[in-house]
Length: 277
Image: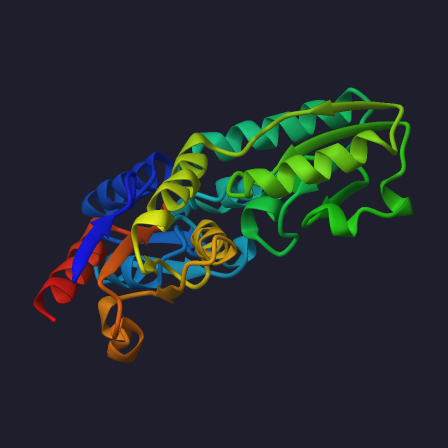
């Protein structure tokens, strides 16, 4: 069985930066509290928990005088202020691309646009971005959710950083037709785009693609969706222990891809297991 690994694959810049900052804080302070999961990979979060990471569900639960960490997906402006009030130190692990999306949303609102975010309304990144808008806004997953509520004179549009390019483009194309004026910021990060393109390059070369990454990872889900849309069988796993021998049977070439929050050690473990089957 031939093994073809997508390029690029594994940790994106923003997640790697967050992990490095968190590891440094854990080494210095011993215990660090993160509002929500610092990244969307359960296995890596478990490893960091072994070093002293503690998760809290709300900023109001931050222990007084302890060290706080802002996850890669960012938090709302109000949550950040609450963490600052309760903590002796706040370490910001927000991905720079997410910070840009927060700033774009804020500037669009101040310029008088009705802000539309193309993304998942339940995703922590999107909730964080919404926290920088001081008025009414709209979140849509794609063009299918565009309705009369979207009909405004002035629309300011941006994207969740891990959105599929095709979904964002189709939504913008439809919104253009129902607004007198639009302003668009493509806030999909370059790492997301490159990983999506890597799946498109990989698909014609293999009989199936294994995508490794957290089941709570939006960018990993998009990779699976792209593979399936190209007609390639795809298996989504979080770690090599979830490999299915039955799924591998009859496939002479297998592709391996990973979301931007999948650490290198999980990818290496998967490659080793596939090579020893």
